[in-house]
Length: 173
Image (cartoon, rainbow, N blue to C red):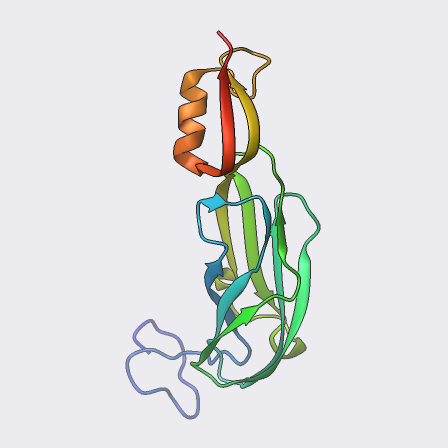
């Protein structure tokens, strides 16, 4: 071929030889939870994955994890033809803690299409950094023992996460 690689007995059309990928799934999108802001409580996890291989995918492992919590893994079975994609909603809901947390990692991934290793694992995972919205309650702002030690940290967190219920902020200067 153009790069000097030897041609097969039945060469590929064009300037390059390529190797077909038999079993390859890709995580295309995480539809829920939305990126950036998580709301305390439970919510469904919905993803979209695709078959980028040449084999029909009949089974696949799907997983997600929030922070350092245990990963949730479920098995998908069905028929996913090459080039097609489908949505999946996990039966186990995501539990978001009612805590002030920045940079909480949410990660979802696909694995083992047709019980085999994925030929291209680089497209199997989506990771997002999130803030947890401030849940209902009373919070203090302005001292080292406060929920938010400074007005700047409070405003910065509100810009990242917002609120998810009735809240009271007491200034502690």
